[in-house]
Image (cartoon, rainbow, N blue to C red):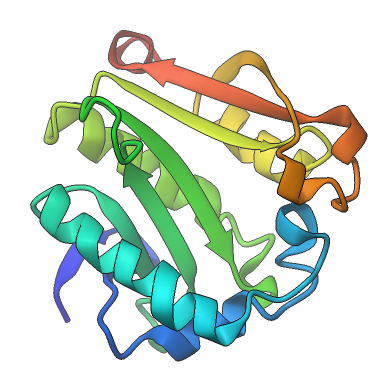
Length: 187
C-alpha cells in the first residue's frame, strides 16, 4: 500500500483504478449522501467514468502531494471512507480544501477530527499550504463540529448550488470555514 499519511488509528493511501466499488458503496448510503444529494446514490457509471478518473488525475496534477485519499483502519484494514486536501482545479496550490466522507459505521469515532488535524499539519508543515478551507451545508452540524474542533473558523455563508436544492436544509445554504497557517501555528 502506498501510504500517504498515517495517524494513530488510520492510514491514507491513494485510490487506484480498481477502487470504484469502494466509492460506489460509500456513495450508495442515503445517510452518507444526506447533505450532498438528499440521500440519492451516485450512479455507478458516474463514479467509474467521472469521479475516479478525476481523483486519479489529481495525483498527477499535484505530484501525489495533494488530492483525495482512501482511509483504512490500521487494525483490521477496513475501508472507512476518504479524506481530501486539495486545491480547486484552477485555484492556487497553496489554498487547499479539507474534506471527508465516511461510512456510517465510522461515524462518531473521532476519525474525521483525527485525520483532519493530521492533514492540516502535513499541509502547513510539508506541502507549502498557506490556507485551508472546508464547506458543508449549514444544517450539517456534525461536519461543522469537526471543522471547529480542528481550529477552523466560520468565514462566510454559501448559496446552495442548483443541483442541491433537494437537500434537507437547502434553504439555509452552506457555510465555509477556514484556517491560515498563521492561525494554525498559534493554536
